[in-house]
Length: 263
Image 1 (cartoon, one colour):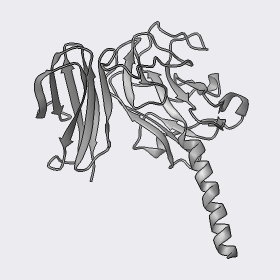
Image 2 (image 1 turned 45 degrees about the vertical axis):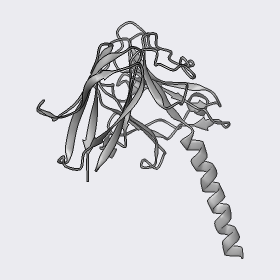
Image 3 (image 1 turned 45 degrees about the horizontal axis):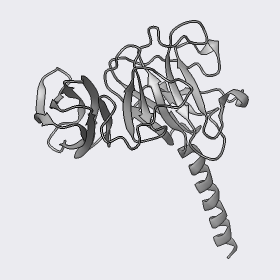
Image 4 (image 1 turned 90 degrees about the vertical axis):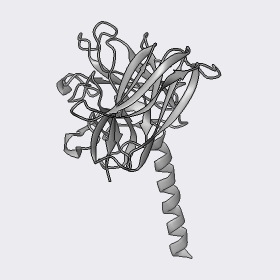
């Protein structure tokens, strides 16, 4: 009975810890900042907004962050020396400054984001347990990408970025407020992945997959869609391992995201 009790206590403790770290979300980011947001060092840096939708404060000091999901050695550890700066209160936001200038502050990291598309990942202090990850496509200067509502499932482009503040809430609106392309899930994938997109207006839609050399591998769809949300299943079972680019073209915009096939 003692062993069982000890096991249950340990299980509860691990569950509580899992709940704490799992509640932190990558909520918004800007990968091409020209004039939209002056940073704390007087420059116009890339930035990543973290959001805590949970009921408990979480200190991300000691967590690891990176713009590459596949290279653990590139991950940067957020200093655990200033919990008053690195703690995110319930319902609170924390802005990570991605300007490759770690000497400037605790929340400055050693990389910049690519405007042509890449990854963002956050890991626990053990460096391997995933807190949240994101793969995104090509970005537009001074236009951020964020979840709506905060910690939601849909990514939107925000022509008015909201660093450190609540994102616009489009809950209950039948049609997207603009043009949205949700990151593929799962990604990396082995046999298939699901792509979701949303249109504010009726538009022709071309979704095609390209390899690293720019050759078109296949067309997922090429037809006109009404305003609304849609999903497509990309069958990758016959594709070779590697990196591909999925391009969505509509009257409202073009977005590209990286797809990784791995078995």
